[in-house]
Length: 219
Image 1: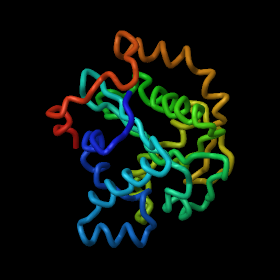
Image 2 (image 1 turned 30 degrees about the vertical axis):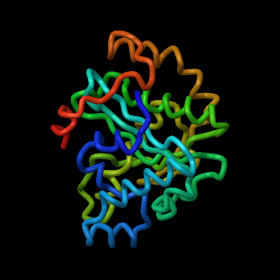
Image 3 (image 1 turned 60 degrees about the horizontal axis):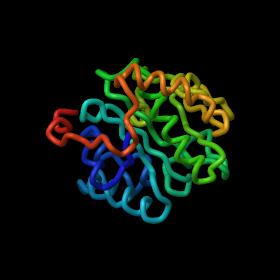
Image 4 (image 1 turned 180 degrees about the vertical axis):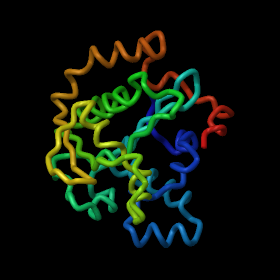
């Protein structure tokens, strides 16, 4: 489990590497997409957030291959958050923008481990809570509207509920969920067990480095 940096940014799945859904407001994102500058904008956002606020993402590697990631930042760094019907994120919380596990690594507890890693990081920095906008209809693309892109960039609401978040503002499609970080720390033994099951042993954070050739196969 390593921090997202400008170096490890290249290990995000190809579509996520250049996606600026969260990082820009809707108008700016549309402009960046039209000009083909989304990759540059993503890099600029990561660089600015790292410099001004600090760690804003985690990437999990299994046998040197990126298997999942999570992005998070204060609400002021996430303009898209203001566009949701259940906004705004509470002032004492950091917004978890998105979480993703590569399909071949799903079902092993990796998503829970990513959230726990974020919780550990934010607790050390004095943050009280994490909030996220979940998708209550994840995977349902029957609606012919602009929500399809939102679906692709949000994690399922059921995932957040399963790992300890509670709904603080209900909505039929985009509920806002919250985790008190004191609650998150109580998972420690569960997470260690899941990690041992997945990897065979605990891997100290930051020691497992990415294998660059393997990442290019991710789509």
